[in-house]
Length: 189
Ligand code: 3AM
Image 1 (cartoon, helix red, strand yellow):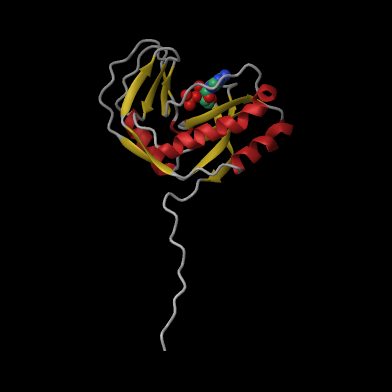
Image 2 (cartoon, rainbow, N blue to C red):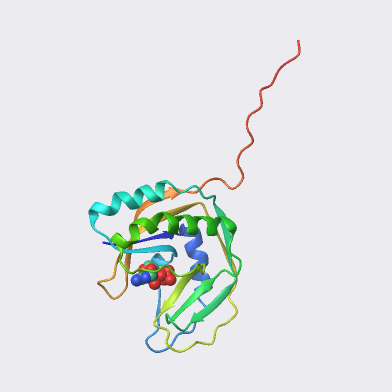
């Protein structure tokens, strides 16, 4: 199976992403990503045997990054991959930490999981359209935010016209603001 780690949106976030994609004017071969496929890729793993799933789940379980809020404030055409994306110009430190740790934790297994694979650098984005060969005229995107409280391991089936994604496992991120410890209270008598 083909797997990747990703941020997976809840229904409200998915609706905000879809709203940002409404203004896209596409021509020719270009295809919108269906709303149910919106995600932010953290680490692409590749084809793995079922027996290796437990290793990836252990890596997911071991993460200790905190949640964060990502502000998506730009719509961009990336010529090299022929995609239009909603991108975040500022990447929260907590997201960089999660991305870096996942990469580090995957590295010892990567040669076995996906030989020759190189992780690209972190460009926090949600792909809105694929096969966009010609740079479209991009309207200013209405910015939207994504409050991130968990991340997922996702399976990708690319055999059909559109990829079908299935969330295999999800792990919570730590609270942004740890609750203060309860102090002991003494009553004077
Ligand atoms: O989140 P996006 O759409 O940028 O491009 C693929 C998609 O990224 C990427 O993994 C995400 C889920 O499919 N992807 C697919 N094959 C890849 C590969 N061989 C890859 N990323 C790196 N190497």
